[in-house]
Image (cartoon, rainbow, N blue to C red; front, side, top):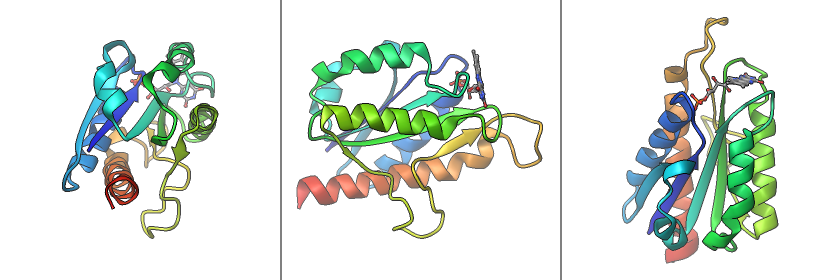
Length: 168
Ligand SMILES: Cc1cc2nc3c(=O)[nH]c(=O)nc-3n(C[C@H](O)[C@H](O)[C@H](O)COP(=O)(O)O)c2cc1C
């Protein structure tokens, strides 16, 4: 089963998180996951994917204009009925990433996708609405690499749910 991870990323942080998610997905038997930037999406691969995860940096606590524009045109990729998930990166804790995730989820619901994060149902780490990576250096716990495991775990959980929904 194919799964796609699609992101906007100008300086590489969000793409790195997308790759971690795809790697987590690919740890599940029967999954072929690929990560793409919005400028380089393989549209045939996305159409064939049963699940699509979308990620974006926080820009002034909102998604980027480029991601918003991409989302507006993505309905043509046959999103209805696919499993959807979202993630975000930000420079600062409380920098708006969860607002970005929620707005991506809203687009997915409008398309008729099934939105999934795993939430608290899988125990630790509890990922709530979707994984967030914080790259600023002003707080001791920041640094994108500190968040790597959340993205890998999210990818694995998402793929397990897609396999449960679409292959059993
Ligand atoms: C124009 C602009 C606005 C930004 N606004 C925010 C913000 O509101 N909150 C925040 O925490 N980080 C903000 N950032 C930082 C980015 O969200 C952060 O560095 C992100 O990881 C960049 O992702 P990328 O490397 O994939 O492009 C902003 C960056 C830019 C360039």
